[in-house]
Length: 221
Image (cartoon, rainbow, N blue to C red; front, side, top):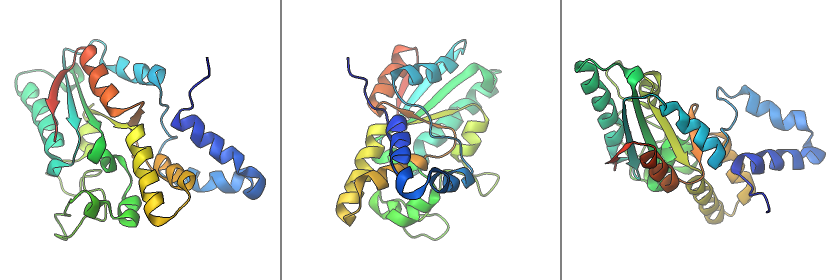
């Protein structure tokens, strides 16, 4: 049976394939300077290992995030965690996961891609500070203590994953529109998934698998 190519394997192959022209060190150096981990593994086996983090958790919920909804799913997830805390249940007993897919996919990507490809305009998201189309991922980090952000959610044990097929499709569409090389754009997108966000074979697979493993479902936007 022919092995299926995953985005990680495709990404590494793309880099190695270009060493003759540019040299391996020159291609890898820019990636090493970025403050983020190696691109997460993807595939059913890798995803199962990621989902194994729910083992032993008492309360589990998955939020299906198909659009930004002004951070609605993130707010609901944090509210759920706060509510359990008030009832005496600590964060360590919770497994709360956000699945970013479809129009929610850009929420998994780094700031400079938002500015470069105008994601704010594309998904109709305003920056609360400028009141203009967002040129940064306004959900990635908290700028004020009372902000809600992925960083705060993850520090409390919340988990986030993203659809690899949606990332690839969005990269290809942008490449077509701008007449850019598809492989180059896909490489850039996969290399700039935010730290701690896990790639999934597909977002809808992740939503289904989470429920099979015991998560209650919530529409996230």
